[in-house]
Image 1 (cartoon, rainbow, N blue to C red):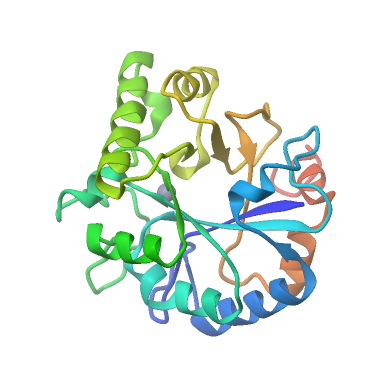
Image 2: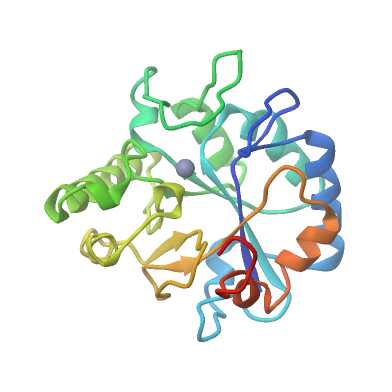
Length: 241
Ligand SMILES: [Zn+2]
């Protein structure tokens, strides 16, 4: 049905990236009750021709690796028995000073992504890890060889540090084009995930996800996990398209 994309859960960060713990808890309770939430790799086993999971199947993904995921999101997910996949910015595992300049409206307190130990701890508890590129650059701005290099390097680094095979990629901000999709395939990914805001090609290198944002209620989630949501959302007559 739907692959959902979240970023983080934080009580005190006003941002399109951050849900409040209470709201997230309510969403998770609803998802556990009303949808078949499965690990992402399992959802990929039953896609329809538009590359969406079939039936009530839903998967939960988080992008970027914010500290709030370990601190707030994962305990809530575990409480409801829900699995997640985390897409990690590879370079953040080997440096403390990753450039987070692309974040809009950062909080007053320092914004922090998880380090290697925290990612490993989540991994040990069953969280599946994918790549979110080396440094969260807009991959469309790179030339193809640089794009392939970024995606190969992030995959290899994560595989080395986390001792697992990395077969999935979430494009930073979901942004991609034909060159980026080709580069992802050349880099050896099985699946790459997007966040479409208009009609765009779908395929193994462009699997659509639906973003969940602050202000979304369980009613919104009901809508967003309906079979026809993306068709409506991506229709040229959708408000704002
Ligand atoms: Zn991101």
